[in-house]
Amino acid sequence: MRPLHVILGAGGAVGTPLARLLLAKAERLRLVSRSGRGPAEAERLRADLNDRAAVLSAVDEGATVYLLAGLKYDRKTWRAQWPRIMRNAVEACAAKRARLLFLDNVYIYGAVDGPMTEQTPVRPSSAKGAARAETDRILERASEKGRVTALIARAADFYGPWSDATSIPGILILKRLAAGKRAQVLVSADTRHSYSYTVDCAEGLVRLAGAEDAFGQVWHLPTARPAPTGRQFVELAARILGVEPRLSVMPRWMLRAGGLFNPMVRELVEMLYQNDRDYIFDSSKFERRFALDPTRYEDGVRATVEAMRSG
Image 1 (cartoon, rainbow, N blue to C red):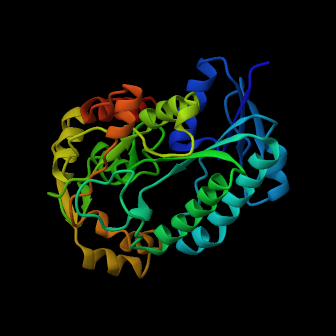
Image 2: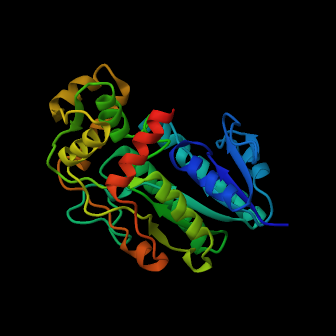
């Protein structure tokens, strides 16, 4: 019998294409989520990843486990739940001798001058970044002690199919332009910002899962270069959508003021260091090891627009 693949936190921007890729390879797949939804070809399980017993029962002996949980974008939620979820995943994988791949972001690096690589120091500049750093340490300590075979795969901010309702470029640029509104860019339209394409991230996780020598390491998932400026991303999206590239820049003071009334905007304010300077994500290590060229931004935006239009 083929080994089981388990996605903890199924659905969403990367979980959806990952499930499709694994099913296309005829892999045995279990999707674990709060909703219990997913493709009929996969086993679907409803579970709360905060529940230790539920996570333990979701993982089979010798499985390959992907931790892709998405939590409410709130620092208090992250501080309370991310370490607990990671402990639950580590304990389940240790007990079942399962391998664990954790999809991480770059918040742990904080404000960075120059490209971010796997060797960039962990210096979080935000409460959410500190929560993710604590979560990573739990996994890294367990891996170093030999309790679990694991790796960390990091991505920049997402764009792509299945992310248009949750990603910054999806919400502020693609959806607004498609609705005849001005695109919105945070802080500056002329700083560069890397975005990771959702389908590339899923393909990257599949490649990592199939490479025994990848475990015990940190990997940056394939992300195209050069990173576009906000203005360039808007111009590209507008050309593909067939609309004028109208944009407005939301300055820091405006976001701070908006945060007084909107909790989501309030949570964005501490992350604005990612927008007031070039924020460049380097995936050269992955590209060399796996000979995988990241999807060009033009092709990725076109596929995202097609997915939006098809519903």
